[in-house]
Image 1 (cartoon, rainbow, N blue to C red):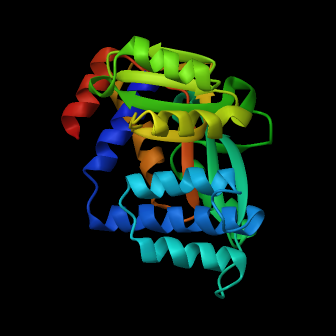
Image 2 (image 1 turned 90 degrees about the vertical axis):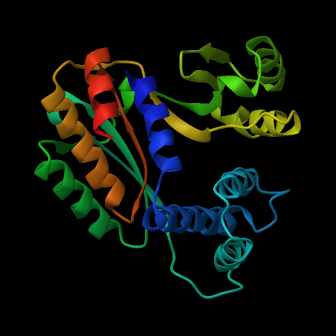
Length: 252
């Protein structure tokens, strides 16, 4: 299921090797630079920067890396000029993808994303062709052993969250984008650790995946996109059958 995929992604990230961790830092650096460029280098006055810094802290990103990224964004240090870009497409089995990138060359990135989709049985779609199948919202994932459901619900809803969803893997808190900063700070103030906190595309229309071969193909596309340096976030709407999800977990 989609939720299963999200929690599995977190599990894989925790076991990432040094090369993968270096890529995480690189992506965070780009996000920090872009946020500082758009809203200034003071996290108290820049909600987007403040949110990314919380994520960098959770990833144990070195302070020197963070400072350099902020100074590149504010112009105190020379650096590459980045911009955000979002692509929509389809993968094997008609699975819908939204791919968020940060790039210094939109033409290169567009060609790369198109090529990766094509090589893995998918295609790049026009703007809006896929996005209607997703909610664009703040999303927080919290492990069940962190807090009780009632306590979390009280803290989250008080801060402006719309919903708290409980699953076997843990809790999912959702909020409208303007409330994201309020919610993440309320959770942080309450000492509630998030496994993931991001502005996400949450699927509302699912693409069932009942065959292991198709699931592997979709996973290969995920991995190929993730290997691209410009790709920051990947959202998709595959819904894995329980036996397929279990088989993929065993393979990992």
